[in-house]
Image 1 (tube, rainbow, N blue to C red):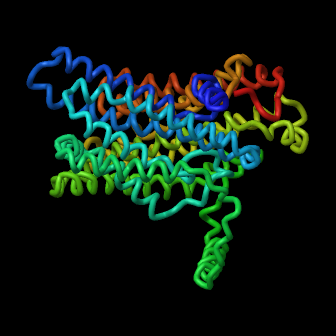
Image 2 (spheres, one colour):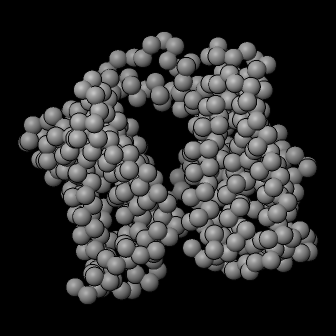
Image 3 (cartoon, rainbow, N blue to C red):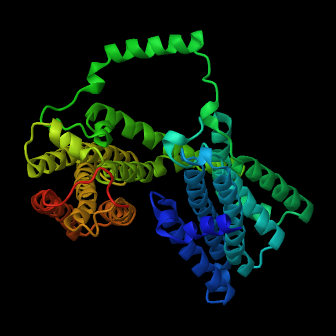
Amino acid sequence: MRDCLTALRLYASPVFLRENFFWIVGAIYAVLCFSMAIAAHAHLTQPEDARITFTLAISSWWLTLLSSFTAINAHYWRQTRSPMTFLMPRLRRAEYRAVLVVLLVAFFILSIPPLLLEARLLNTIALEALALALYSGADQVGPSQLRRKPRRVRLVATRILFLFVLAPRVQRLIFDAPWPAALALLLASSAVTLHELRFTDFRLDPAPPLSDTSSRFSDMAARFRGRSGFLMWRPPFLPRVPVKNLARFERPVTLIIGSVGLTLCFSLLSVAVPAITLFHMPPPGYFRHSLPQSARQVMMFAGIGLCFWMRERGDWPFLLTLTPFGSKHNFVREILRLHLGCALMAGAATGLTTAVMLWMDERMSLPLGLATGMADALLLVGCTCIPALAFLTPRLNRPSIIALLNIMCVLVVLQFAALTMSESMSPLRWLLPCCAVAAAGLVYLIVPRTLAGQDWPIEPPR
């Protein structure tokens, strides 16, 4: 009992928040769904808006479930799959009991919004159990170096079910299901969850044999890499600093191909989801109208990926010793130069894609679309530089604070500014890229000197 209480205390401590960013997303969606459910329960919305409020509240509630349960599972698997846990059965049992208690409390709290909207209790708990079963596996969350090898069938089924249940018609179908169907869904989901949460030493799994087919594919991939050097072209003006998280943004040709490919994939997905959930195809122009929004989503993904290096700085003391930059100031300045160059190339690739998609959707002429796309590129540069302001003080120079700034700058500031550039016709909108350039210049001027005066521990404080 004492071990279980000790494990439970960790869920109310900074240990739970460490390298666990799902709780931020869960908190945002929880505020949205609770506020809408309370407003609907208190009849603060108009009667004709009740259906829309229910749909938005339940969609936010579904995302709250997934984010909250993923955060809990990430902490559980981080605790139970550490190397020390393999030698301590008491610790494994305590963590298993603690996560079951926390999940029961989370079930109770997260069932409040649907109940305020007059949903059935059994159906609500069944949908919560389904959300928990989706992301409870050891191959879904937790430290990547300690994860089990991903199971492809489960991975595909999880993503399909997530999108399927996100549809309002499917949500209403589950909430209106008779009690035997809801009970069956509850029992099946609970069985899957209990099976996934059990501890197994996956380090002892035998390595799969290398078949002749995989060897053939490896040879084909090697020949392709040898003949496609233009895809790996790297501009010579980029500083040569071995920052691993920026390496994927150093190839402009690959960035353009990836930007266009992801935009088309997101648009196809936006067509496929209504076709599956509503059982009829969207209008013919639906795919074309979704292209600009898909391009902006690709830009936001690039903005989040560009700031990973700010959180993972454990190798900086070794790089400072091995690279020929001399002082800390010069080293940080070269890294910022590399970041600015990669952000500008990623912004140019995604901005050019956005411009072409706006022109194809007949929202803008091609010259105006290109100008808007280049403005979006500058906005991406500025928004990815703002999280570096956390380097100015040791109190804020923590990976969790930088991650929060990165998410807020990309999901709020960049999204709002990009929408303003494409939807508004006010001439004042052109001040936004100017402000972004000013923010990037300010970071480049003041951050190297400040960060050079701080200590660089191998493991930065969390």
